[in-house]
Length: 261
Image (tube, rainbow, N blue to C red; front, side, top):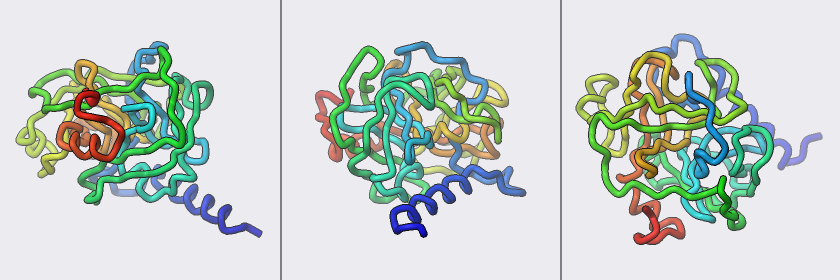
């Protein structure tokens, strides 16, 4: 007979599985989606800020290390999951093994998260030790100019409905769009969303990449939030704009204005 703790774990597992099962007639729906489609394999130490956010030890989403105690990710990845079920794996190219794994102590979702404002902090139970392969990334202080090339990374699905990547992948094929350009492509959006356009079809992020970083010139500018018409479509991908939430991130973590990047 299942005890209360075991029953809760089963329920969360069922919910996570349900989120990644494709639904009929949803190809035109905006939806959260975790992966890097048609990306290149990362080299050791190339993305030392990249972490895997894990549920009961299994990769669920991406995240970015911003200090020894805090990771930033998407709120939709963690807001409904108790901290006891969450861990962070850092310092590894491999999705399943190596690196170091640290338990999450507390989930701090943005207070007005409801699909918009898709950002959260994870406070770790213990400080993570920095190495050549584990380093924090600074937070963007201002918006990036239109048309700039952005780097994304993650262990997500390599095609819509395909398998998760075992090795960390990345892509530099996305560019920044203005809100006006994005609205014409995908419909109205909030000022807290960063739109990234793909240079060609079948690029961008997918299931398993959610919460992962978008980086410009070594600074964190976005957190993977949603895509339109499924991952790899020609529509822009939606990222939570880090500069818009910078003050909240600093106030709710151990960062100071002089160390946030």
